[in-house]
Image 1 (cartoon, rainbow, N blue to C red):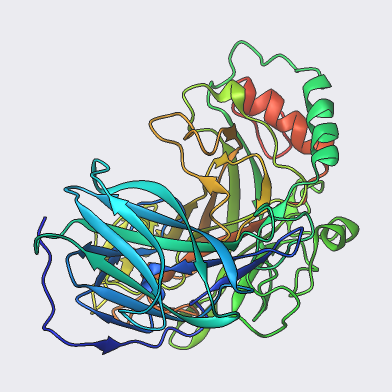
Image 2 (cartoon, helix red, strand yellow):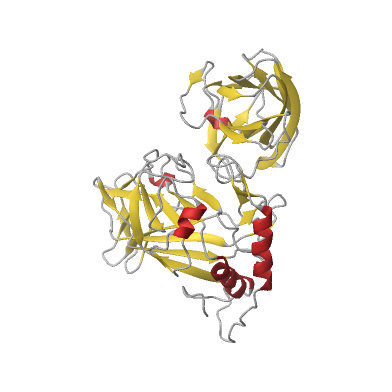
Length: 457
């Protein structure tokens, strides 16, 4: 693949709020994750949608002389630093240099690039280096090669001061890594393993699945996963499930509030999506089914979510046209189906007897270590051909939202509180009664038997 080379020069881009993410470490070291597309300035760089774990975007088809500047990267106290880079390459070969202060500034670290098997075949490289300046500073990524051919894509960089172990602490929260409490998880897992399995009847449908049947609960400009403790910091969200969900929600507050718009009652989880608008007026879901299933070849490996698990699917920052046939888009179901498209082509118009729907599928493989991560996706991954990737070995239920809206749409189309149709995304903050969830996973998913909302066959 050959990229469209931009004209020489520098394009400055302001990407507020996505430049760096700090992660608190148990022993005072800090990890900073920098998304490659969150540059403050660049030369010769373009951006594309990535298929790497976590989704979003990567910078693409970099060649000799291309560079990016990242402002405000806190490398911590002067001294050693460990740096990782998430890269992909169809061709090799060259080097990605990280320098401080300027394109020709002191060398912080460098990564030799070899072919990884394709432009979206991702691997993580690690290097160590030193820096003389403490605190936030500009870091430049500079691409070097012996020819002008494109040879590398980059998804992100991370920086960890060597003054600590680099292992996220259990107390890290918000936008950082959150470690599972190993003792509590071991106890939850032991209780799950000890649960007896209720044999499915002979006529059971052999589909590994159970569900929560929900309705709309409330709306707030809150997001307790992305902006914990910051009321009003988010775009408007439509909340489903736990009726107490707000910016200050935690695992404990969700479990302490029994009010939910979902059945069964033991599911006190919080689910939310960006609010849909038609002619400026909110259109709230008329029904939501949250399916829990498995896309693994061997669903018997599935275990319940650890208590307090969080994750996000979709990309609120993705603003791109979504014509008919695009994956993960709004669609019409029911008599007559889709009757046409909006004037801009991005939204379906449904026949009078059909309903406007969206299905969002979450990641179903877990790293086994973290309840949350800086991107809220980095601790989870999607199955690969029915198996979990080596870095995400724990099979968790495959969650999907199927959302029905009470409108057929019109030629004017819709908007989301997050922007275009392509920005649709969903959040899940899991807070089930452990026994209720465990029985459903064992009876319905592990046993491969389709269950209803009550968790029975």
